[in-house]
Length: 231
Image (cartoon, rainbow, N blue to C red; front, side, top):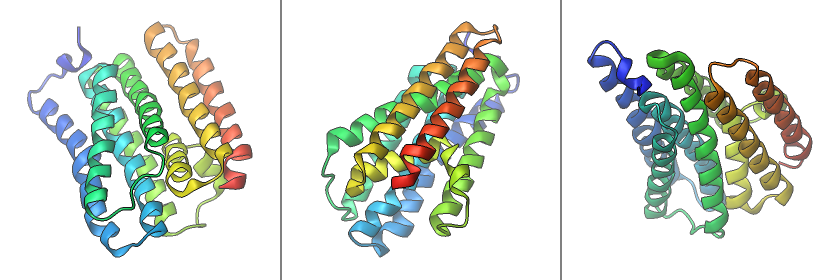
């Protein structure tokens, strides 16, 4: 049975899907309209990274948690990224110099985020989207803080967040940063996606959580050593 179908009150699915639209589509659109026109060149490319990362994360995690399907989260996340990029290009964002690389980042990040939402739907059933919303709000708050006040948050904290990994990967593609940053962050996103899916697919067995947590910590250490140092 689809976990999302077990939500008791008919109002909750509507609210849940509204959060997907707000976090994955309306929020990024407002952010792009608010910040992008005032930026130019490299500054615009630097701003779009966190906006894209938060949109991919919000639509992917919450969408998969609400629907109880990995594929739904992936599709919603990709649509969020595509719509944000198209709007940004319409507002004179410089053309993407490496569209294939950007597409690869979108795909791997979308799978990674949707995997977490899918796990929430499996482990928490109808309450999974609440956990997804909590995770999205927490990571988004940290990314927004880091974007508005650079240097105010410790690098080790940012290195723990898959949303920041996505931001760094997008920054590497859009700005032309170090290749080590792109490869490391993509590996971290892919590895955590695989580990998270293993937990979801083997549920209700609990031992895979050890693999997932270990993978996350190892990937965070890799990002810290090979991406943060050159970011």
